[in-house]
Length: 344
Image (cartoon, rainbow, N blue to C red; front, side):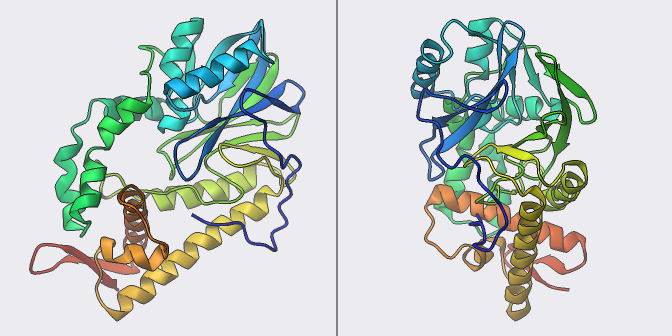
């Protein structure tokens, strides 16, 4: 994760987030609320867009009793008497998709979601994670961290309330109309396979989900189900496309932390961050061949618990794959069968 550089030209027009159960109007008919998360990143942003007969929710929070209670407080408070008209889900991570099943069933409303994200959520809910153990072991991950990763499916199930059996696909290049307001649909890989973002050109408001965050870098990971994937390449390509598609002065409404302006500056910071990490890996692998697990402390200097180590490990593999596919690193199996990487 990356802390925003102190010299950045990014501005924060609303530095104080809404209190639990409260909303802040970010633009006419676009509200910002947030829900607690039991992680180091302790919140997720949810946006409500005025629609015909109520509000469209963009993301949901975790599928837990605490988040349900927070939703109930919101609906009994500032949104009293208003119903949800639809749920728009940006990607499959549980802090964004967790209450989709509960909300769509409660209000009898449709789910709008990218097809890949919908199917990815279903896959995790029905996946045998233990079968992926060799992927982590051959990259040198410890037994404790491997146990954490290979039981994540059960953890995911405890954080989501399921998906409706039907959904409306969000696809890049389309226009989504909500309450007469037009949103251009964009999608990008890296943090998730096909994460959806929405841009309202008339208001110059960009809902960036987790693709562009102001104060941290979103996790970019290789999943054991697709070990030869290049999510970092997809992410950097998405950043470049966003720089072309969205104006620099757009108000960015992200999935975490606070809204900001200065999108192009932030995109450049994120790209530079990943270039620096690739350079750190290259330097380490020039001294000696390394497994992905051995590269974790090269990129992540602080102490990590098993859960954090699993995410850090998967992000290291993403950087290694990116560099391998561009001819900067070579991967080989050592005498024990463990995978190691050296500079090309």
